[in-house]
Length: 484
Image 1 (cartoon, rainbow, N blue to C red):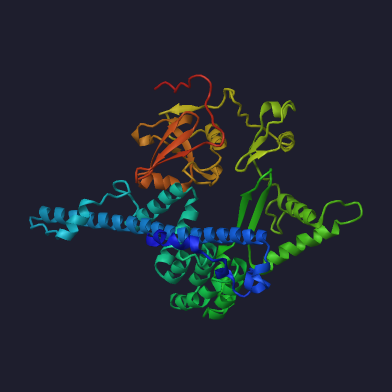
Image 2 (cartoon, helix red, strand yellow):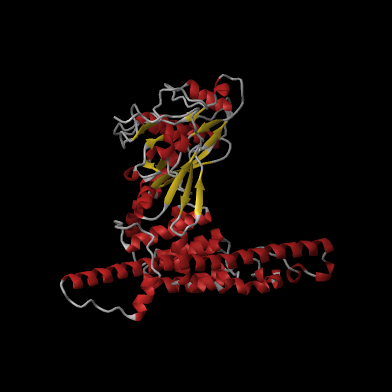
């Protein structure tokens, strides 16, 4: 954590340090001719650019300090859980010795000192071992504290461990403001795909390039060196990489969204060329859409309405939940609708979707009776209509920072069922399977307040809040079923 103490020289940063002979296009007095002829306004610009570069170096140094802090979280969680596990093993051994009438083994002073401060983040009799508890505790605590997803926290923790271990030269360059964290991510990603023995040499060769190249150009250079350095053929590596193929959805602003697919190169190219050829065939004097717009429309038509050669997709239509204000539906308001998992959509699109919907699940500010909001202690299983209501309310997993869809989540009793919790709308929330297990196996706890607001407490004692996508509280009192 001493990196922050090395930032006192930031104000002395000289823009000429960025000049690599033109690689970044920086023009200084030496490369532009007579320095005395520079206009005063250009001197001011040089000072402003220099200040921006100095701030960028400060960000890099802070990133190095963050990497050290994050790795300290990982190391502490691991050390703590291993200490607890050793303590349990010693207690078990002593108990067995006493039971057999033997003299219990004596603890060393060092072991006793460790035991005295060790408290597990896992619950008693957790089915997770020490490594799993340590890992899940570290990433969940970091994700909530840094306001990132647990997947991002896991990646950050892995990168931080690499920087404080294998890639210390890169960490030092980052701390000195010589490279950016984006360069570090690229270097680690390519280096980690090589055998362990080859990574140090890869870093030594690529680090000087990171200090002078833009990130995209550095990525291309690193990829070429990786191909040359890798002992396995590209054929073998392609077979391994096929397991990572995926399709991802990313909501965007103004009612739009992105689809990203990671495929084998020939497949990705074939998809693009087929869609492109279809789009090109639609062009003509009466077609006002651009080729890019035609490609997007052709792709959407294929995916939404298309059928695979095996018949997959025939008769299947995508299902989305759209919440439309009643006055918007009647055309008497322009309040946006709400598309599940994405957010606001314009009133016209909301009305079009509602007009084509085969059926409605009506969720009003004052919902109609018909949805059973509580079954009390009569049953653990959540009724189907209540689950549908909660999925619409929650939209995503309700663990702090998680964005997995609520439609594929499990229903969790905030106040545990086995501790006399009830199956009722204000004691239920959507939790994805990994976060449901996290709540069950560790000391993460949660309470629910009116409207569906969840208040999480981490094993560390820190507190986080999770808000529902659509706050819901029925009018009047909701009575639980009378006991039999």
